Image (cartoon, rainbow, N blue to C red; front, side, top):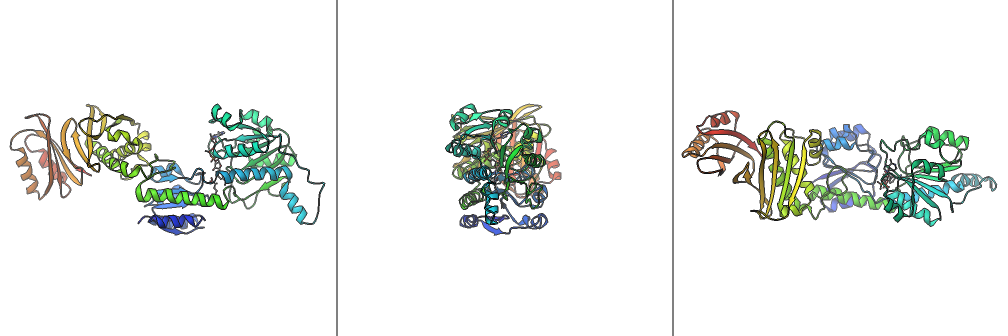
Length: 525
Ligand SMILES: NC(=O)c1ccc[n+]([C@@H]2O[C@H](COP(=O)([O-])OP(=O)(O)OC[C@H]3O[C@@H](n4cnc5c(N)ncnc54)[C@H](O)[C@@H]3O)[C@@H](O)[C@H]2O)c1
Ligand SMILES: O=C(O)CC[C@@H](O)C(=O)O
């Protein structure tokens, strides 16, 4: 039974779904990084919100971890490159809290427009300062969106309902989508110069870090009001404080901070500054949504291999998974076979799916080939990190599909470019389930690639099989299955034998010394 740790406070629905789906679950929140590192080795999955930091150190300690599930959108608390290189899938729930967060941004916009928090505090302090709190209307004002993705577009929709004019800076926003959203796509300079309110809805990346820098804040319209419900680090907090103090910025509302939790901050107590403790996603509706979604996605992955909303692996729905999985097994075996048989630099790997195989999602098949191929050199390679490692090693990966059937109803061929030219192996699925090799370097040979195997290339001559059988028998090696193929009578023959135990290097040397043997190698599947 796979085991998951929920390490941040999450709606109880998550644990309920894990258990219903046959996943054991522990809820242990509030651990220090050291305490988490001490227990993470016991788990196959880690479900988090924003408090748990999944650092390289945690991943190094997570010897059994297969998946990290973020009940939310931002994954800046997960070291994704480290997770990918350790073969850990990282998933998020990209839509579950979008409405809630957009509503929080709108709430903060109202709070700034009418100074609601300060008016509330003053009134409850018995001051009745009716003339102190003069607000501004939203109607007719210009709202500048920085980031017009899921949340930004919901904010735009709500702002239009409030009769605001919405302009958006987002390099990835297409003109068609801008028209559909009813917003004017602008460059950042125009946005800064024109917006009465600015709201941020981008992830924190190298391009967005400090997007509201001191320089950009100085380019804003005097009296601008700024809202950040996306990520700390998008605004220069020190410059924001100065510009609030000088009155250039009329108000700022932050839900997110460079350092969280922000228990002390230079901005705290500044007039017209509103703060919430990263509450963007905190409604019961959003928390139920993300808890259900993360638990379903992680359980699908751990129980049936389905991959949804992964940031470092191709998606594979729980419905597709049973059909694609036997192909992944076949692909991995074929990748492993070429990886074991071919040494030296391989600049290109091509994966050709034919017949029924060509109708499937190719991404997991390609990843499985690369995983089998590269695992020959490292035990830590898997489906998640194989495409990254292949890229790192400069291996070009080609994918070809031919929907028409050839000799087989379904076939996967893996070819590698070598100094001696292109060499390929091919396999099929028997009964749509059992992977079987059908061709090896141009020779038809049918074999199940399982356990310990011996690969021999020899001159096709009478008596050879007997001599080989005797040699193995004398070494105490029991033959399980025996597969033979040859290019033509008297030409080159290939033998693939499954044996009950590993073939030692000494025995390989003895086989290589037999008359007529060109190559002999031990293989492992
Ligand atoms: N406060 C919270 O509790 C809370 C809750 C949910 C999401 N968030 C955060 O909100 C942010 C947005 O979430 P989303 O679901 O809308 O994401 P999204 O991916 O749907 O949208 C992000 C948008 O930012 C745009 N973008 C990327 N780089 C940009 C750049 N350099 N300049 C301008 N635009 C750029 C993208 O093109 C995209 O349209 C994320 O950082 C997320 O983590 C915060
Ligand atoms: O989990 C939370 O409370 C915050 C989530 C939010 O930051 C997100 O990116 O989805």
